Image 1 (cartoon, rainbow, N blue to C red):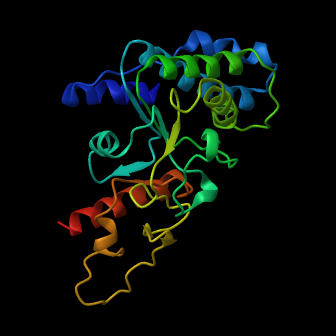
Image 2 (cartoon, rainbow, N blue to C red; image 1 turned 30 degrees about the horizontal axis):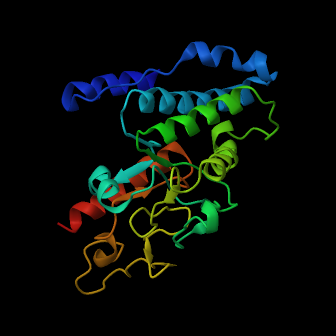
Amino acid sequence: MAVQLGCDALSQTYHQKCYELDHFLNAGVEDILALSKTKAHAYSLGLSRIKALVDLVSLGYDVFYFDLHHVFFRNPLAYLYANTSAPVVVSGTPASGCRPLAAGPGGRLPVDHHRLDIVFIRSQPSTFRCLYNWLYWSTHTTHDVGDKPLDHHTFRNTMQECVTSLGVSVISVQYLDPHAFPSNCATKCGCRTNSPVDPVRPGTPGANSSCPPEVMSQWVGYLLGCSGSPAALEADMVRYGEMLAATK
């Protein structure tokens, strides 16, 4: 609810539309899957995200979804439209680190767990079909994935089935380049030539931030998914924002 109110407040400045989560869908999750309250909460959030994507794509909107623990250095939409072409674009898997990912022969997706910190969906018939399949499968199948969010752990299998059945000429999945969208789960200063970058040592001549400016210039957004506590996340957001300001 706090996030919903925050989005409504921001709309007064940026004039964006706020999508209200479907609480009626969420209300039945616990009964359907006989989950504990903790588990039901995780499933509920996941189903709301999938349903939001289905609803918006069906209305003809391209959708850029991102978790709130991001700092953006440039307009991510400008980057996505200029540098990606696949109908479905997602962030790299946690195991990929600084290694750019790509689907294999026949559109085979990496077997790593997909966190879906960023999801960009181009609105077209194939994406609506695959998203609808994802929602249907998630709500009509009994799952046992511990306490982990439902959408994170069902995305790969449902998208793989969709890509395999429709073909890569119709639907495909592309992964964001970690050099442009790094994560503090893999590195504190981004990536260079597929490897983590070390922070600049204090006192280095010409240094105006704790990360090399030439590496920071590649960043579109930074994922702060491994900051830990809310206080640590807030501190990291401030620090990365200050690093950005110091390069200008």
